[in-house]
Image 1: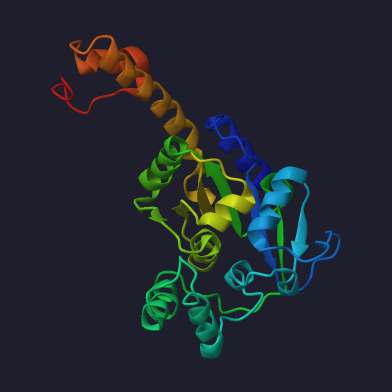
Image 2: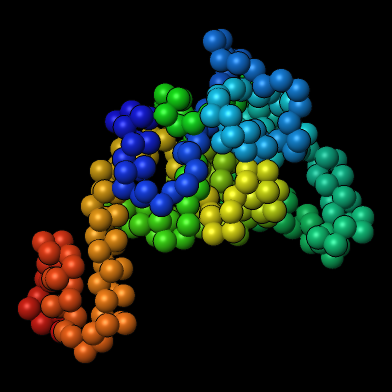
Length: 272
């Protein structure tokens, strides 16, 4: 299934999604025939994503064009920080910034320990990362879906039931760490509330979170999304109907009324 087909399935299944679906693709060499971003992005990949959502145009960036290293390290455009560089990061978080860690040991424990354990860095060196809309980038590496928790729940179920796997979610100290690097390196989808910079520069609204999916993973479960979306739309209607209008009406009758053939109890005694 190609990028345009997947984009269409997501759009039709979850019409409540307001933003375009974004894709990112790492390149070993700077790509030809694709516009290069002009200038230097502040802070980095997140602001590039925000620009794509506004302009609807695709472009690529190199490591020198991003002030923040989070995004470019996520795709292998630059190597992981060395010990001295991490030391500077620790100092910056101890310089009176109210967001800072309580001491250097705590900062090191997170950056050099917990973060790397949860989200390892890529090993292959890349030259550029392309950012654009999913429908415009064939065979991307990572796809970003910005949605509310309700639609996120449907996507999670559409993924989990055919694969038997759990989609993990993260509070995310750095948006790029768990929304870009983790799915890119591990090949596993994630969801995250993101951090202040991720949310602000992309332009996320208060109810929106980010679901990140490795493009190759869609083939395992995307066919399940339309029926899951239809089921849960009707299921929510049934719950609302039974809760506010007829709380004493038998559960099975209410479900059958709203879900029709989608409601098939495995036992005659279920959900009485």
